[in-house]
Amino acid sequence: MCIGNRLETLNTEENLLVGPIPDSLGRCESLSEIRMGHNFLNGSMPRDLFGLPKLSYVELQNNRLTGKFSISSRNDSQLRVLDISENMIHGELPSWIWRLPDLQFLNLSHNCLETLDVNLNSQTSQPMLNIVDLHSNQLKGQLSTIPLGFRHRVPRSGYDSMARPLFFFSVSRNKFDGTIPTSLCNAAYLNALDLSHNHLTGTIPKCLIEKSKYLKVMDLGKNNLTGVIPNSFPDFCSLKALVLNGNQLEGELPKSLAKCNTELEVLDVGNNRIQDTFPCYLKNIDTLRVLILRSNQFYGSVNCLDTNTTWSNLQILDLASNHFVGKFSIRYFSSWKAMMGTENKTRSEFEDLQYITPVLTYQITVKSHKL
Image (cartoon, rainbow, N blue to C red; front, side, top):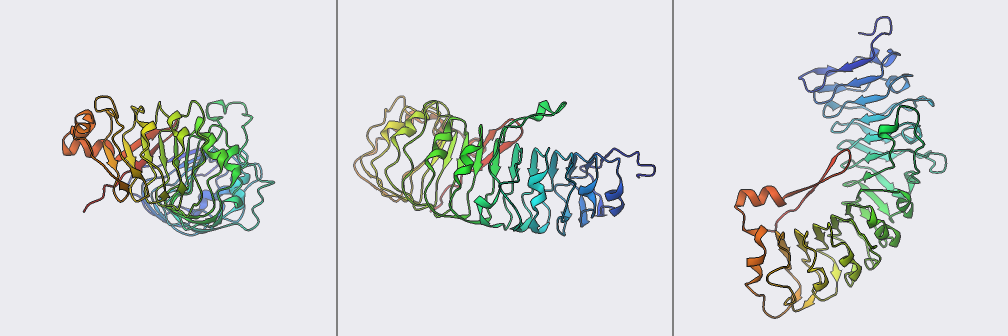
């Protein structure tokens, strides 16, 4: 296919192709785009693929590729998009990925990656990424090992349409431990942050809560975080979803959450050790669709809600396994009109809550508890 080095674009997406990718493509110096996603390709990636001088797009997602990454890449690589998600790539996540000067989209999710390159130097690696998605691997170590000192990109000519700061970072469902690095707070305009389902410890950095001025989604659930939730939500908070379920957080729910009153749809602090009264100060957040306080130490009455105006969009309210007392007015249900849809309509609306960022859709699945 590359006789005379004339082939520039190879696109075979969404077919039924099987077998390995020809190793000869790794010697096709004219190739700038290889898009072979959504097939049944197997074997390893071409050995010299990432050494090609003009390569800018690699999209091999949703295949059956195995093997490991090559140990090196070009220092002057033009690679901008690298998507090898939903394969079976294993071994080490190489340090050269973080040194690619033009890389903006990195999706290696749903693979079997296990370790970070021990030579990774966060001082010399300065990525200019917009999307970093490493979720559903087996990566271990500390998040501080990843170079998270994200800076604003100075766009090259012709790249202006993609020249934005990082706005999506996910390492969910890995084996990372240690604390949440404060360097994450340096990612200006971060829209979605998902660190859930790891083994993270320590407290939630105050500066991360302050980032809620730009953050739309923050999911720190299913870790081992301790301490209190910082009471530092900013004015003009733009959070749509805050998920802290399944940690060891204690103290009171921060009153500054009331500042997130224009867009907040999901608040999930279930399965922690929070000691507080019912958060009546949230009753004016008309956008709220999911409120989960389950399995904490909340106490007192819940009779502070307005039966006619509170939470008209609410679809899930979970107060189970707390210490609430008193009466629960049946009149609340008449104001929660969003709960009155048919079974199919309700399922489609709340089971998969989607948040659209400029490039991709971030999805949260809310699971109901069956007795």
